[in-house]
Image 1 (cartoon, rainbow, N blue to C red):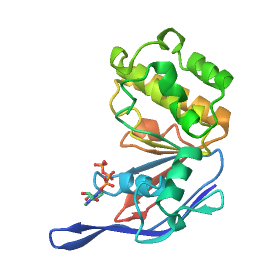
Image 2 (spheres, rainbow, N blue to C red; image 1 turned 120 degrees about the horizontal axis):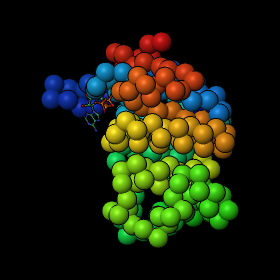
Image 3 (cartoon, helix red, strand yellow; image 1 turned 120 degrees about the vertical axis):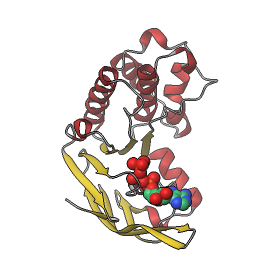
Length: 218
Ligand SMILES: Nc1ncnc2c1ncn2[C@@H]1O[C@H](COP(=O)(O)OP(=O)(O)OP(=O)(O)O)[C@@H](O)[C@H]1O
């Protein structure tokens, strides 16, 4: 379970600090899916980065399955990202020098959790079995994002964070990627928090939260 309490984050602006998050509270149960929407610049990606341990909060707490992420040092946050959190970005962020099979196995290998059967099953479910020896540049955008989802889920994270996961894809391809991601997240029992501008994507999540003026607004 993910619990965020009274989270604050400011950035230095030209005229002094700019408060982006001003007391964010949220709770995501194990296995739940949630969309985070909000205007451009409202702080959605900032919140996702803090939850993913990619940046420090100014104050407040973020607890994932009992571990307070805000209390961890850099090494602790890196270990948490490796072992328990999976991130899917808009730009698929695959490793260009590795083929599809190695990209899928990458994070699981780092986490010491590589499971050949699970990786094979994921590749089948994601329609990638004919592409395992290809390199990212030889794939379409939708295929690349399916590899990125495979890489994330191969490591069996308890929390998947997605930042506009279908933002670079056309409607059909985006819908297929979303459907597969939701099915596989459900199968693994992970929680999913997705940042999106798309109402249609948000509508597929069990819960929807809106970020406004630095706080959660419904
Ligand atoms: N590293 C940084 N340094 C300074 N300001 C930052 C930094 N990261 C984000 N900001 C500022 O914080 C605010 C929120 O940015 P963020 O990217 O979280 O918004 P967002 O809701 O994800 O926007 P979008 O929907 O356009 O992606 C913006 O005003 C942005 O300029």
